[in-house]
Length: 583
Image (cartoon, rainbow, N blue to C red; front, side):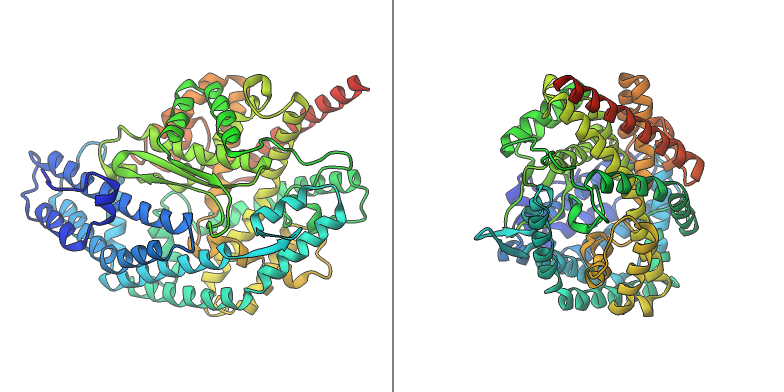
């Protein structure tokens, strides 16, 4: 058994490669046979868990405060001195297990993954991968530092977005232009960073013997169940089925707002998504402070399932969340894992909107995945396909929806909850076309790396795809801002090709939700059972266990969209009935 592993976060963060390396040597020197493989895998897991948690804690520190120079230095020291060495040493252990010919129980999928990783691994790529991670941190710094002066106060762009939800259209437009100008101020910096990303990724792919970075990324992301052509088929299905549905949503709101056309400042995110409420309806204000967000979210989860509610309470009691937006906090939201503790940590930028509620539900779904896999014995069995990891989060948003009312412990009146659910379902419909833009943009970039490295050409391609999939928003006179939309989608820069997962997962999540409309307890039980499997079965099997079908086709997508539109219509009729009664 390995000895002297760190036992506290403080010891872990101070861990150095000279202290780590002997543990790898110990595992590498041991006799590996049927009688010893279980103990060997257990020790490898304990070591791997510590290293994963070390990375998670260091990365989290840079996100919690992008201006923290000490955290930045610790992360860079890890990327330079530990990460490449640990990757190389871990690869040798994978090769040792593969060479043994042993196939431990429950290791069919992990062994498949290891073979793919062994084929991809190159020592020369380790410093390049570390460099790529540093560039990702630079991207966070650029966007984390963006603030503007609004009402005589310095505010983050995330907080400024609250202005897009107020009824005064003039103020919305002013805020939108202020945000757009601030982001364009960093145009050159983002373009320079992009070219560095592309150069590093081209070298990584070439070192691995892959014809392009897309082939490298496909194998790196362990995508065995679908191909780039399947992604393009999915985009075609979205264009056929979802774009018309999205256009109906935009048109409905255009008429309700009595506008000639919808402009980007008529959307609650100031970009592509859900339109602002009609006149007379102010933005939903679900909570006054972060403590209220926590308490009401806890109540909702206890209604969905008592065990899930208990998981969320553990997050709160153990300080495993950072939910409030502030200056120098990295943008976005995520869930990370302190693997050796089998505990999640959720990171959100809440400012008091309904989107914050949805985001907290979403990231908590990821957290529940971590809790449900706590009994999976080996770290290699925890590698869940991202396409299903996002089912955990998107599914939770929908499973929690019936409990948004204050009578259930949630945030809203009956009418407000109906409105919130409509907005959520409409946002989901509107998301699919945007996802298609992001994925097709990335497919194009890496199919044409020379052209895709040119920011000017990227602007043109993004503009072309945007006009094709999001025709309901009028960007006349704002073409420069529209064309640089790819700057603001962090996945394109930091985690390339990680976006199709959301679209596929949303289709799975809607199917699970459809099951819940018929039998909520059974649907939640199937959901939890699928989460508990970790990465021990194939992606289609995970979907099947959860009660869904892994699919790319128009008929499956149409069934989902038809259900969503039917529920939207029903909720709208409830709001109309409530309004009539009040009159």
